[in-house]
Amino acid sequence: MVKSILVANRGEIACRVFRTAQAMGIATVAVYSEADAEAPHVRMADTAVPIGPAPARESYLVGEKIIEAALAAGAGAVHPGYGFLSENAEFAQGVMDAGLTWIGPPPAAIRAMGLKDAAKSLMAAAGVPVTPGYLGEDQSLTRLQAEADAIGYPVLIKAVAGGGGKGMRKVERGEDFAAALTACQREAAAAFGDQRVLLETYVARPRHIEVQVFGDAHGNVVHLYERDCSLQRRHQKVIEEAPAPGMSAAARAAVTEAAVKAAQAVGYVGAGTVEFIADASEGLRPDRIWFMEMNTRLQVEHPVTEAVTGLDLVEWQIRIARGEPLPLRQEEIALTGHAIEARLYAETPAGGFLPSIGTLEHFRLPHGLVRVDTGVEEGGEVSPFYDPMIAKLIAHAPTREGASDLLAQAASEVEVWPVKTNAGFLARCLDHPDFIAGEVDTGFIEARLEALAPAPPPSAHALASAAMALVLDEDERAPEPWTHLTGFRLNAPPAGALKLYLDGQALDAPLASDDLPGDVLLTDTGEIVVFDAGEAFTLAPRPPLRDAAHGAGGDGAIRAPMPGKVVAVAVSLGDKVQRGQPLLTLEAMKMEHALTAPFDGEVDALAVTTGDQVSEGAVLARLTAG
Image (cartoon, rainbow, N blue to C red; front, side, top):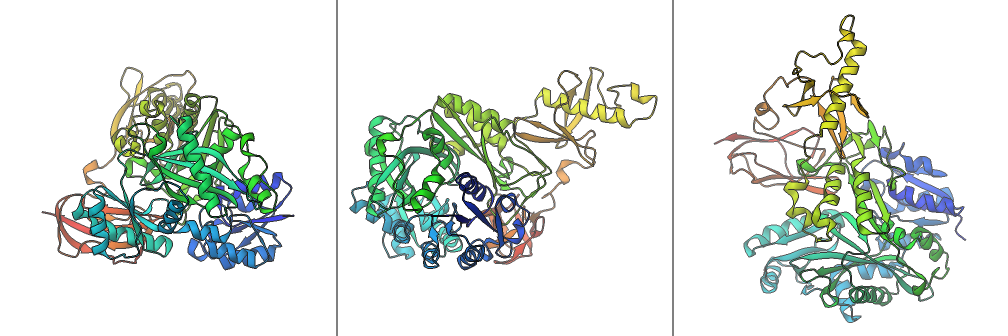
């Protein structure tokens, strides 16, 4: 009997597992780094144990520290969450060797599915359809280039030990292959300690379909239907749903049968996800869906499966780890309604989706409207050390249209400041006619990026809220006789509106009094922050002092957009460069970010080398025009 569980993870992941454990009457143990000492998951647990400095490689990724913490706290079991060490076979074995219950699949199953090339070979032998490609041991550039040429372009390079889009590149032309391979190998080595890659034919209109499976120690395996995770950016999932739109009964039978076969082939126990790539050029056809990989853990997107099945998947994990049989037979698992999940990230869509860090001075999520899974709170910090996802929003309704409408409304009601988020971007994705029509594939976001990423101007209602908030604030502070001149401003046009400035651009903000001002923030600098359709607009009551042409980057300085590590320097002092040419690559928050030349010119200063840690705003290089 498991009486106490340590969760080897942080944030919303740990909170999610704690909720189920506590509902089952099981005591909980949290681990935390120095950066997370005041985090919600630490307070939520019955016991909390510190495990080291902020960087994950010195805390959450050190299995020995976590096992020591479990033993010290008297935990009887370890749940890995999802991410970090959840798919580390050595960690799983270490937990078991320490006499603790491992709430996850057997180490042998993790190893079998951990390397993509070996897993694909195993699946092919088990009768599971796999995508054509190269899985060989010869990792030389000559051999890989030759295999890519033979497969035909575009071709996909993927890290053998990869996941989450790291170590993955689409290559359009043979002449680009060597550079893409080097980037993939570097990312793979940094993220997984293994730079080996495999090659796959690139599917022209791919859909990412995955199937939730569960196995028990008694030889039983079931599926909990499929999810569609096609809306991605840089191979990172953004919006997921269940069931997959346009999935016929025949296609569902084929993909779920293949998933069960995959789990049975490795003697799978616990929760797992079998991922497939589908060619959607002619809809979802049973003969055009191929095995991609298996994630031997619970997935971030598992709540949509919980919504459409009415099951608690963490409870299933715990019961199976106790040695119990699967709670239900396949025919007892029903599929009801439609669920969609959106990942709320701390990032700036209009700024290339760069992560945003800082204090959550204002943090409002639409609790009650949809399910919200989060591990941060108002006043907390978004740290540069971990993944920038700050919450998940999950909507469930009888129909896909109903779920989409509900989730779009929820995303529109998100209020976060001064940290930037993708809430407005999510709402625009969900409201897009092609998404509503179910016309989704993995290129959906990229193909519509120019329409989806930039925020539209604030609405008249939002501007009116800002104007009235400013007027009311000035009325409170103004001496007699000015307090009676409501709405009076020296820069106000005579038609009952104020001039407000957004990024230096003047906007007419109408004065109104119906249902205003709403939730508006007045900053210490005299600016007004108004929330509208998931966006946070910072409006100034007067024009900027300097022309925008003299802003950041106008002097040719290449600055770090966030704290991070320089992992590649592509230029040397004195090099001639062209606008858009990559100069340096910065690794931050688990992703690589290329910094490019803002204009044609020459590198006249280079302040960093590969391996340097840099702070936000640091000048890394400088260009002169010419």
